[in-house]
Length: 336
Ligand code: NAI
Ligand code: MG
Image (cartoon, rainbow, N blue to C red; front, top):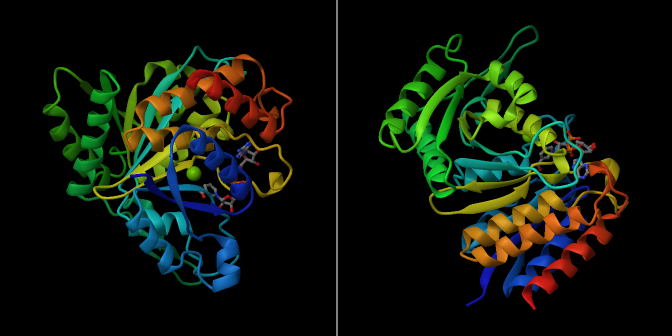
């Protein structure tokens, strides 16, 4: 039976990139698409950025494909649709693989590494207080949450044949919260030794080493805020936000999205890079068991870059639809 996939267009460049992604997935396999609404346009229409119906539909589908939403900074108590959705579906692991593409300008040797970011607690648990002169945010770290994210990172390392996991923290200052993350993480790591080794590093030094020698890293496991910041930095190492995909995985549900946001200034101009969105679609296909189809799609993207049919953010001159067309052509060739 065809897999049921919830798609959420979102805002800005979201709808156009989603339409391309659906048309590519349709070339590869039969799926039943179900639409879900979320984001700023939804808020303007319905008064909420994430209608309950969308969460319900996500729970009834085999996976969710999400593009990007706008989160306006000036509306008090506005809830980010994607942060809320990750929480509602308990998508505790945010997996972001960073793999270089050919012909994409870069100062580094070909890279292949991944960041596994805790997605449900840390600084983004949404507990903030403020009066006129003082504001505080609560950072929640639990033993259970830390152990399960580090276990996820090790399982990913095992599956993808990486030999090291780095625990990224700031336990020298955040002694209690990151102390607990580190303690729980090391306990999990001991079960994978010696097949997969484990080291740890301070988040600020990792930010520096990303610039200096990112090839030193394999899989990094970290808390919510650090993972968010490091993964935007990491995307710049392989060509920018336009090329990086991510998966949000929980015990029951999964959601796939590009790392980038809604890039409103590119909306409707047919210039946004479709690669992050398409790589996210490939991750979704692999997660649903369509490993061969996912590999075809990954390869079709590589071939498009080799032929220099790529968007301007990665040094090309193709429009979004020209790049998608090229990828589709490569796919059809590979499948026939
Ligand atoms: P952004 O990722 O939307 O854009 C930052 C810059 O990255 C763009 O100006 C553009 O130069 C480049 N970029 C992003 N996607 C690209 C693509 N596909 N092709 C080529 N270049 C691309 O981040 P920004 O500007 O900080 O946020 C814009 C809106 O998106 C905000 O409302 C923010 O809250 C939201 N956002 C949503 C996310 C999500 O839905 N998961 C994640 C990050 C931001
Ligand atoms: Mg981010």
